[in-house]
Amino acid sequence: MSRPLALIPVAAAAFLLTACASSRCGERPCAAAAVPMPTPTAPTLPAPIPAPQMPTAGTILDHRTDEPIQFEKLVERLHAVRVIHVGEFHDQVAHHEFQTKVLAALAEKTDTPLALGLEMFFAPFQPALDAYVAGEIDEKAMLERTEWPTRWGFGWEMYAPMLRLCRAKKLPVIALNAPKEITRTVSRQGLDALTPEQKVALPPLDMTDGAHRAFVKAATGGHGHEMKADAFERMYTSMVIWDETMSSNVAAWLEKAGPGSRMVVVAGNGHIADRYGVPARAARKSQAPYLTIVQEVHRGQTERRSDTTYADFSVWWDESAPPKPVAPVKPVAPVKPTAPASGPKAPAT
Image 1 (cartoon, rainbow, N blue to C red):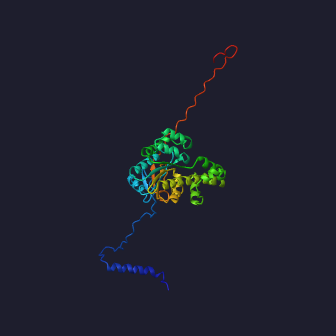
Image 2 (cartoon, rainbow, N blue to C red):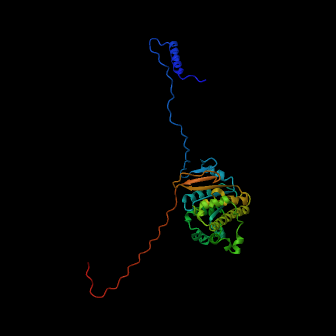
Image 3 (cartoon, rainbow, N blue to C red):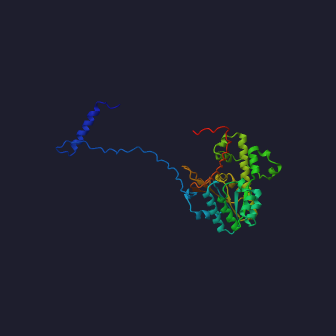
């Protein structure tokens, strides 16, 4: 049975009287003992997750640790593999300066064949590059024979130091890219529009990678998601031809040059990031170990990727695009003098 509520005050009073009698209060009124109260605290909130710190210009990040690495340590790592893929934004001066620096560092301490493979030159023009490296033709003739101004078009002086270094050290320069006549036709009309000769020249095309398809859609800045299915399929097929041709040319040179041969591959980030494009395809064909470097540009972004799937290393730079050439001012056509009107001249107003 529960205790009667009326008895509770009486029992409490008796307890207090007993406590006073047993204490040494003297003549002072006895006060109840103070009960310490906990100090009020602010409510505990979950700690905010810090945003990834954006690297400063010139920082090389090792994606195994997401920590900066010195250039000398990077080169040590690169010496351990046969293929080094170095990405770029085509219009960034700093990216090309870094590529030249990597190539020079590898060329300085190597006793095995080393080549430079370039997306910027197209395979049919390989003889012109061979003649340039051998000293048989000059730079101007090489650019004319490779049709640089119309087939690539980005500023030659950004790429020139790499080619001049290869000429000085007699390092082969390999034209990696598929002819535009093929990729453009496929992108616009599909594989069936190619001639029999063009079809035979194509390497086997692996079109089965769903993750690569999603990557290409994302890389088009959203346009891939808006395309009709047949238009995207043509565009994607053209992209695969691009990557398969470049990776086949990498593997072919490594096989021809023999064991220990190495290549620095220079291509746009889209062909290197996430390894879908050239790196993974070249590795399947050559079995050669490789590392990838993606180059970034500070453009106000607050997020970045540092996983090893994306790349082995990333390098960060401030915007360094060369100034766009000023459009020539069209000459103002001279005003043709008008024939004097007949009759008296009107008075000036």
